[in-house]
Length: 118
Image (cartoon, rainbow, N blue to C red; front, side):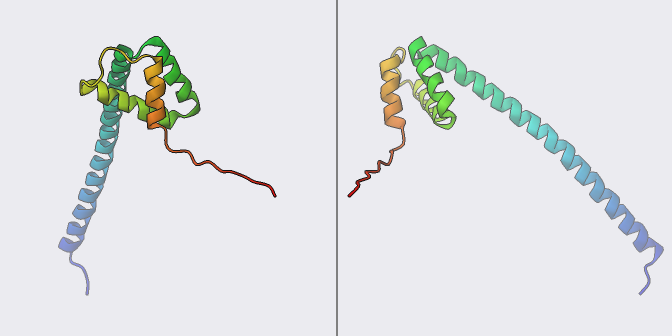
């Protein structure tokens, strides 16, 4: 079964269209990534502004110390503080003692092991 010139031309057009769509999708993917990164940076700036507004210097220092050793846990705490502030459940500013209590509450349960020698 031989292909006619029309079939060949049709196949050629399909390949061109497919290539154009792939190029377009790839270009759009880069634009989406840039927009997503810009949105992420904007959210981080807003979160930092909320933290500066609602945390005292001592509380911020404590949170920064936690961030040095446990960055994932510190990110969780920052999200929690931001959520509390935005919902209006923070009265005044969070001081260092309140931050300690919040860290204790949010800290995952630690498993303790007792080793006994016989």
